[in-house]
Image (tube, rainbow, N blue to C red; front, side, top):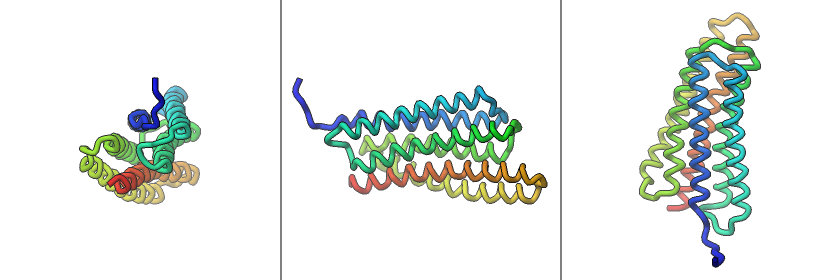
Length: 208
């Protein structure tokens, strides 16, 4: 078998797609947790398992990046995209675990609304990431990036409204501190999704 310097681009793309699909799993589980108000040990362990799988994929991407001479796009962009996708899943695990630590076991409409938008954003990320492999999906990829940006703006509005209601209605300082952090973390997930599409957009510009 001859040696080839041609990149196994599909390997990188398959790993990115795997990261994106794990993000969908995490977002779907988070939505389920918020709807039921169930952040028990078993549920959080399930989220942690997804987060560990995502870490393994990120490590494999970095290992492959170090061993591959020619890559499908800039090495820095591959590194940044892998890290950004991993960050989305890490934050979802952080919220899930924090809810358990805080002993919050009741459903919250505002958090469920956040989780619904987060799942939409993460599912849209899949389209953006998959589009990197196929030039025929250029417009769909761009549209996905625009949609993730729009959902991040929705998240900003939701955060402000949720915090406004919290400070207006809550009287227990500890309750306020807990939920203020949770709402801010939830909005940060949408910021991290936006970071992913910014990297995708940068790659598209460089490849044009």
